[in-house]
Length: 188
Image 1 (tube, rainbow, N blue to C red):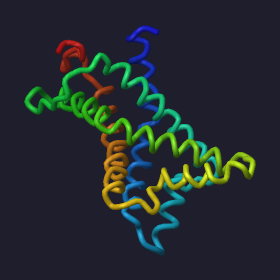
Image 2 (image 1 turned 120 degrees about the vertical axis):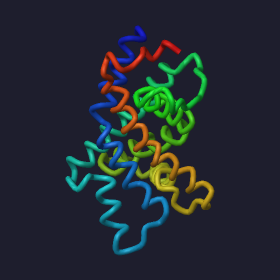
Image 3 (image 1 turned 30 degrees about the horizontal axis):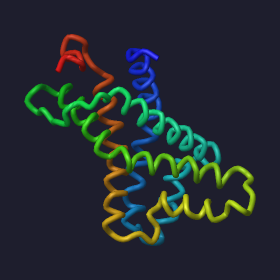
């Protein structure tokens, strides 16, 4: 696959899933820091279904699967490794581009874990699975929510949740590039 085609797939996949991934990231933040009752359950329900029941659950599933594709394609687009930098003086587009690349690479393991376990949770909770996989189901759920993990691990989950928001916003800014205002990404 050509790099130009991969970039187009990455851009459109990101644009179509950005809002759901940003919502999942924002709603995941208070869940990681142990939102207390009576807010925890409705907040978690919104995180999992966007308030749209079964249809919303599948929308979240699709966005989480898209996130896995975005993370893989983003890594391929970033490879060979580019310098990790944040150039604030080069204009808004370059800053958004650097933020997108920097946050994507630095948080890649955490975002892959969160998106992968989100996909797994939806599959386990909506499709019939044999009882032999109950332990796997519990592990996937625990890995997705950081349930029972120490504060240091929860901090990493917090960073991963924030990364989905940062990636969605910076990705839209990078996609919305006035051609005259932005240099080619490969120029430096």
